[in-house]
Picture 1 (cartoon, rainbow, N blue to C red):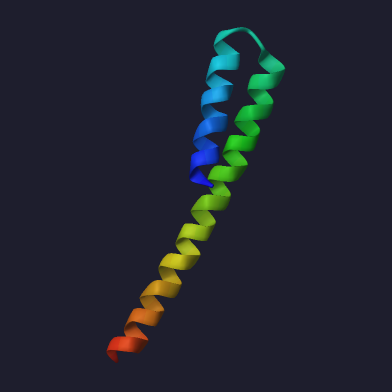
Picture 2: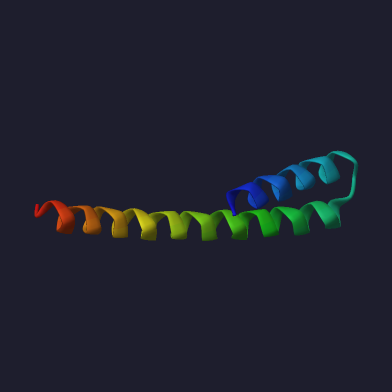
Amino acid sequence: MLKWALIFALVALVAGALGFGGVAGAAAGVAKILFFLFLIGFVIFLVLGVMAGKKITGG
């Protein structure tokens, strides 16, 4: 998902540089949504991993 967010951000930068404002805005919006979804998923899995590690080690 992070890969797609970076691809859309790159598309937004290129489209903005070439003067395609609508396409750049849409691509930037999609990139922002995908990045925040990735961030939320990362934090959830990080917390689950820490909790599972504590349960396995008995800490």
